[in-house]
Length: 200
Image 1: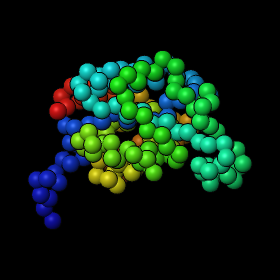
Image 2: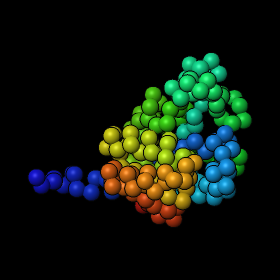
Image 3: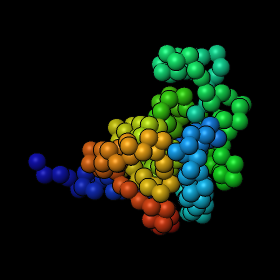
Image 4: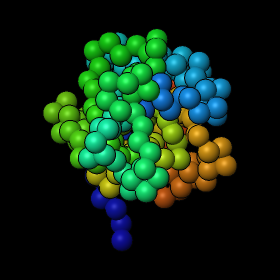
């Protein structure tokens, strides 16, 4: 069956993007694999946020926050009887020196930034029809958010040098799935900044 004009190239339409920063919090970077790339992540994410702001592109900062009373805990947390990222603790705070000027915060309790949050409504409110993703971790929260974006027909560009994987063995298989199954784009910081500058 031939595709209509509105379907062709749909996954490449980044004319109205939003930048979504995922879990750039102190607690996640206590893991050795992520602590080792903390400075790189800060540099690239700050560059992306600055470029987005300069072009009038929406910047959303997504943080994971849980309650100590277990009311927000995942099945794995409940099974292990071990919570983390409690509201008001240093672990739940944003990374120091992360420039979030003019950004909007979204709080989540699950891997996907779309699950039971106001993210979809914020994107609609600001007329964003695609997202650029940066942050951690590629194999969990980034992948889950990207999958839900695909389900919502939102094209995704992944900031390949502005993300990191807590499980290095999962990195290539995760990227392969995103590209092949969800037609999502891998871009570096320079390419994303150029994309923001041409947004309208």
